[in-house]
Length: 112
Length: 111
Image (cartoon, rainbow over all chains, first blue to last red; front, side, top):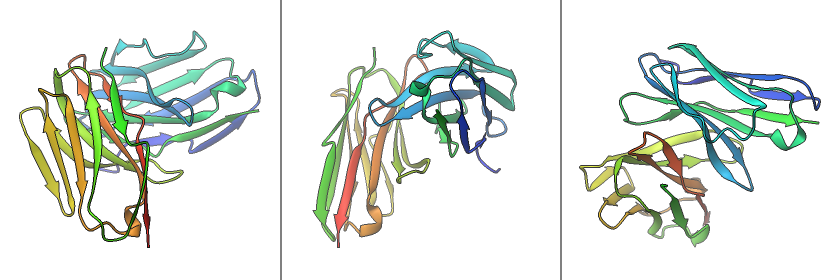
């Protein structure tokens, strides 16, 4: 398996634009997590899914953030409208049955 | 609410020394604990996973221990090398099925 795949690796966008980050979990994994990493706040859990169902989105910072998992092999994290303070590295991770979690390489988002 | 703390925040030691990184968590009801390594500008690489029923795991020069009752884990690195320089993160898979991270220990090994 190629591991957790995130796209794009880098995204630069202007304030106010919509940004969509994508994640393909490891095949067979039933849990998917979205994280945001900044120097100030470290790794923050934004939302996680179990069997494609959002379980806890209490970490989503604002209504501008939304996440979906339409099927077991794909998830998106959308920011609309984006703001400069959203600049961070966004990671996706997957696991199966509360075992070892594997992370993607991340998407570095810069909002100017 | 589960909280994970890592001490120290940064550590610098000369090559060849053995060292210990610490991780503590507030709620002992966990499924597992995982140690990761992160190099600058890179993703997270899993080093060791300790299930809640286990006391320790070993991989090469790395040994991780878990004491659930006291809410503590340690990562022991033997015979440190410059290539071990990175940030080490501890993560707890909580009973709420969330994976919560500590803030990490930035390790520097001096040649």
